[in-house]
Image 1 (cartoon, rainbow, N blue to C red):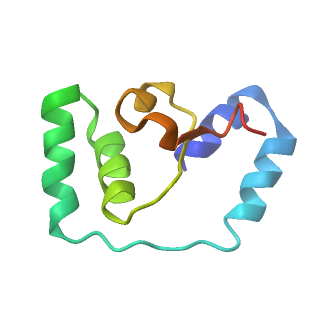
Image 2: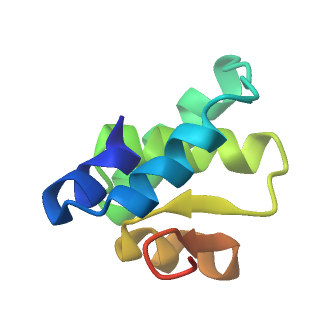
Image 3: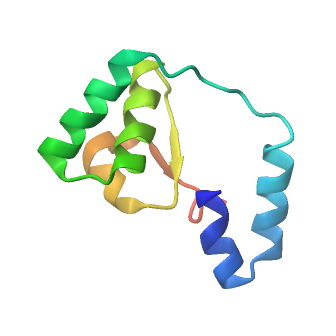
Amino acid sequence: MECLVAPLRRKDQALLHKFEQFFLRPTMLSIPEPPFYQAARLRADYGLKTPDALHLAIALYHGCDQLWTNDDRLSNMAGSMVVNVLVAQ
């Protein structure tokens, strides 16, 4: 849902189509207990909002090498792992 907000605001049909194609083949990651504690630590240390903290904690827990987002603030915590999908088209 979140990744569609900016393309919808910009009326960027090409990017919306890319997301629609991507979401046809999703991979669902489990959310066991440890990422919730890590997300709480990220909120406490960096002031992230809960959805952002969970997004990052779950990606880190599963060893993801990329975190797709349109929120540059996450790059402070995730560094080179962040891929800004609105820039990296």
